[in-house]
Image (cartoon, rainbow, N blue to C red; front, side, top):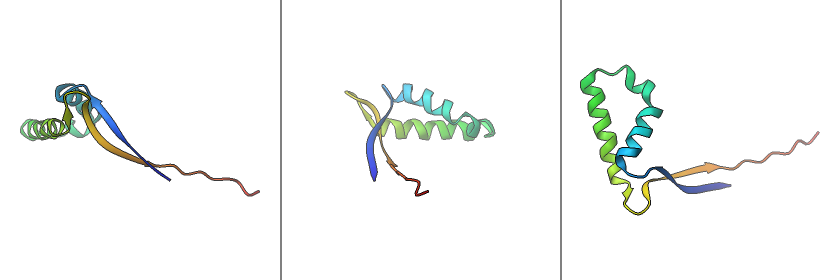
Length: 72
């Protein structure tokens, strides 16, 4: 069974950028300064594209719910 929900990443794009850049700090750490700045700018642009002023920065998310029973 699949479940889809909206995932709120922050109250606005700047708030969401702080959260997301923290989540991906390990990926950003090895980038040179220009590449890191470009990556963060691109991320910010995407967060702006997903921003609803009344609800925050929203992305679609999905997960599968799997249940299993032991037959033994």
